[in-house]
Length: 178
Image (tube, rainbow, N blue to C red; front, side, top):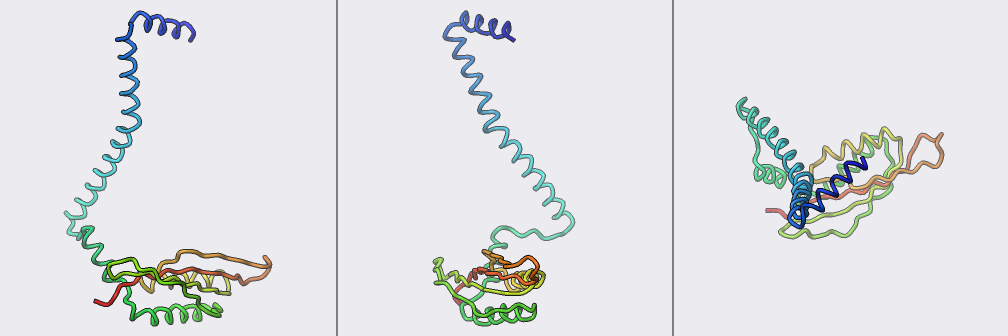
């Protein structure tokens, strides 16, 4: 190894400034290749595979939504401010169906997201069994795509106790009525 290093240093000293510049350019080219080009080639391969899968779906007659169509479908699924009380009542009823004790629901200040959209946060302090809580969270996801589970905090005073205390923070995205 020392012999190889010595030969490299000897060749570098005989090459002069042009050789040093050439070695520097070679090192720069390798850095660009491995630092920038290789990840781009990997992403290109992934995108080509995705394009092939979409082309196969189209050839089978399966409709493919454009990003604009996906956005319009999501926008149509957002809740209006007028439906908020009904959605909150549905969430409370789902807690009751799942044998969860819900003492109160705390509301946080609504945030305007602009252009007729807003976000409202709610805290649901719940008590019940862990499987019941999981079922309620699944029910929450079925209510609307605009109901988002942001945070779940679980507490259990004693490991032998079957019930858990949970605080679930939900955000509901809404839009003004058209």
